[in-house]
Amino acid sequence: MTTHPIQMTGLALLLLSALAATPASAATIGFDPVDQTVDLGAVATVDVLVSGLAGEIVSAYDLDILYDSSIVAATGVVFTTSLGDEFLFEVLNDFDVSIPGVVDLAQLSFLLDAELFAIQGGDSVVLASIVFEAIGVGSTALDFVLDDVNDIKGRLGEILPIDPMAGLIRVQGLGPAIPEPSAATLFLVGAAISAASVRRRR
Image (tube, rainbow, N blue to C red; front, side, top):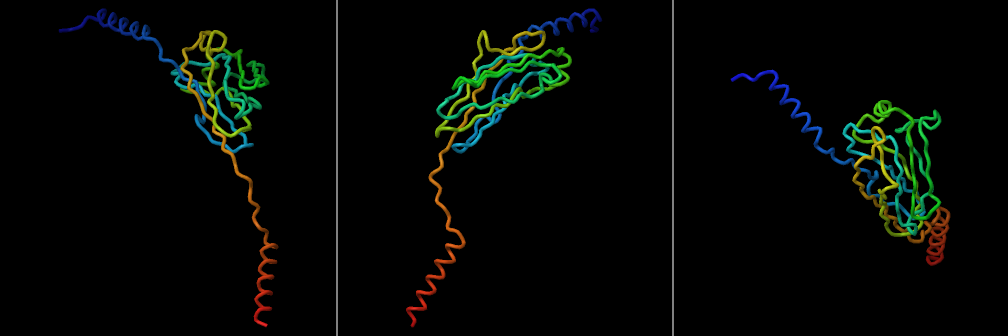
């Protein structure tokens, strides 16, 4: 039995329309590293990472990240050039860490979708790095807020379906430092012991 070329074309079109009708799986936004431990007074840096793009792009975003301000304090945000170079006026970057417990960061690219794909061109993209100072002993989750105001946009400025993944920063306290004896102290103690033993022999 032979299949007519028109039937083959119809089957191919039917298959393509079925694939197009299948909803795209949601990308994921999370942190790298997902879980880290730092000492009290140290700095913890986390990357904000979108993965599972599967050919999509990130053209803009506005995100709030919540954390426990008794454990860490956000001190700054460093943006990557994955949405363009700010110094070449390709992207608008903005962040606010003035409210304890909230990091607000946003980027809006002025590049074309094809240009962004050429820059990002893969399954994952790092948007920015957030710097925290460890100010209290304990642990804090890092949680994304995604709502009517906070979202991530892809091609043609369409909102991307995104699954948020929480992160974790643990801060460990250090006990009071015990000073180690210096070499001079050890030498003097040794000399005193030697002198005492000589006196006893006499």
